[in-house]
Amino acid sequence: MAASTTNLSPLSSHLSKPITNKPPFYLFPQTLLNPLYFPLKPLFRTHKPHCTVSSKNPIADFFPANKPDPEPSFIPSFTDDDKPREECGVVGIFGDPEASRLCYLALHALQHRGQEGAGIVAVNNNVLQSVTGVGLVSDVFNETKLSQLPGEMAIGHVRYSTAGSSMLKNVQPFVAGYRFGSVGVAHNGNLVNYRTLRANLEDNGSIFNTSSDTEVVLHLIAISKARPFFLRIVDACEKLEGAYSMVFVTEDKLVAVRDPYGFRPLVMGRRTNGAVVFASETCALDLIEATYEREVNPGEVLVVDKKDGVQSLCLLPHPEPKQCIFEHIYFALPNSVVFGRSVYESRHVFGEILATEAPVDCDVVIAVPDSGVVAALGYAAKAGVPFQQGLIRSHYVGRTFIEPSQKIRDFGVKLKLSPVRGVLEGKRVVVVDDSIVRGTTSSKIVRLIKEAGAKEVHMRIASPPIIGSCYYGVDTPSAEELISNRMSVEEIREFIGCDSLAFLPFNSLQKMLASDSQKFCYACFSGKYPVMPKEVKVKKVGDFLDDGLNGPMDSIDGGWVRGPKNIDVEKEIDPLYQQSKI
Image 1 (tube, rainbow, N blue to C red):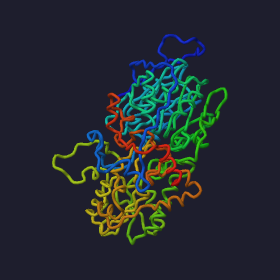
Image 2: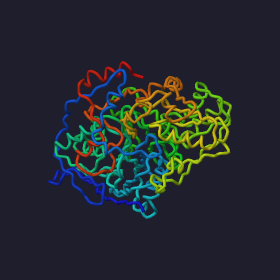
Image 3: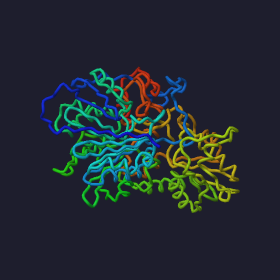
Image 4: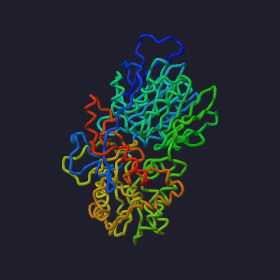
């Protein structure tokens, strides 16, 4: 049974009352109320620290291969599911009497974006009521829990934690009370200046109750002197750097915000009864029968209330969008429309490009399920070769399992993927996968297929080689763990043991995107980051942001890699990016 908690946070309905001696800000992520006090002082910017890049290989310089990480013991060992991981998904609903139940269904549709925690906050009679829990959506919620969440307005969140154990206090949405009322927030993304913001807030007296960068947003809203509430959000977001698609809820408003670069997706839809819905993907809209209207634009704030309906405001002057290309390669469901494009169509074309640019004589095309299936269909159609299910995935294997005392080679992969000998035996097989991260799982899959009798195994990867870590809400290994950052394509082929290997050419990917090409972020393929982490320490896999680990601020250092300090960020990094902008 998943652990869960229910929270009640009263909303002040007398905003004009004088300030009392009550602490101005409270965070209620648990049943215990933990007052967080800090004086209302402006947030001062600090000097930007230094880091370095190299025009030859910026990734290698940020993550020197010959230097150990500060805390090697904190680096998690990846499971056989060797893929980047999306950290979360969000949903918001305004104007439906079944808001919390619709939110529950929408979170089911977004379950692929996070499986370690889920939560819903609903508003009823000026009270924010919250239910959060560790586990899948179906583990956290039941009829009893949903009955505790009446009201016509709700927000929800599914979470993936980047390292360590997932703990209840870090499960969103967060609910906080401050001198003008209460607010709930659910966040998808990652703030690259989190440590600087947190340090400044703590210097001014703030007390943090979680290790999540989302809590910084609540503190910034609380100290803002702007009125009304949505201007507090704008004021707070002006201080944020990085990726954030967020939904907020107050006593009478639902607010959706997307960062100026639009890294992470956020869409708006409407039900037939007029209810407004925000969600990370359109698949959530489909499930609750909401019609997709449009994306929340990069840098936009959308405010929904009964008085004025939906209002749109410009958050910040925004540059050219840099939307995450990996949403189309791996994260989003194929039936979603992300950044205005069908995910299914994108992946199908990726497969067609591979068949055109990296053809090979073969008898059958198979996919690594489930994320490689659509690209494999595209490859097979273009190559005129039958697509068959050569690997069957078990949907009943959890994240942990009991390994037999007598070691079985590739035990974890065999639990999840079973080869079909009748499809593979004696055949020249093309295997299509969405990406190669560390290469360990790919080598096991190749061995599995050959042991099933395949004559030849040819790997085709529906993305360019991944050479850089992501800082915008995706959990990826550190750069030295990325096999494409260390090896050539031929060396990777030898490592995983296949007969041939080809990646989706980067230029072909851009050509396929046509006029939208400049709107996507390719940092994981190019090492050129739209927003560089301007802190001495930069995020890597195993960071302790939103990871559920408890402890002092110093313990967070175990998940960060220190960068050299010998060049100035303002003078070196930004011009370098502008010159090599893709």
